[in-house]
Image (cartoon, rainbow, N blue to C red; front, side, top):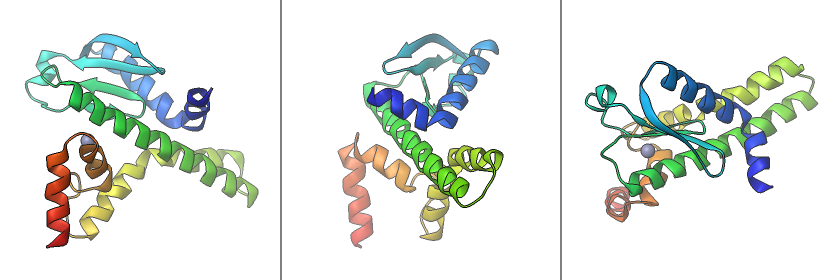
Length: 161
Ligand SMILES: [Zn+2]
């Protein structure tokens, strides 16, 4: 039940993830597709991508793993998945508030869909603080902190300097 609520409230993230999954499968960018619980599309980068692109990724509700990555990286991507669900909920509530204040349905849906861009705001925040936009965004820090203690300790040391 809780997962169903999350899926509904983060519909932009769910739809974008599933559409990208279908696109990646169609163009042969990924293989070994699975639907992990709860309702998470999953695949692995094919070697022609993996030799150039050394990352695992989360796109909305989709997780694509690099073939050499382990369980820790998968857990890291699951953190991003939960962050994206939170973004969806935030976008949903913002859209609802906009609707309440007179915005039309189409614009309210657009506000909800804009929640796909929230990770970029986290990068912008890191850049404004003088940090590296991607690696030092709070999204990345939170995901690494939940999986790699050594990263957490390094960032805490840097913040306390
Ligand atoms: Zn990450």
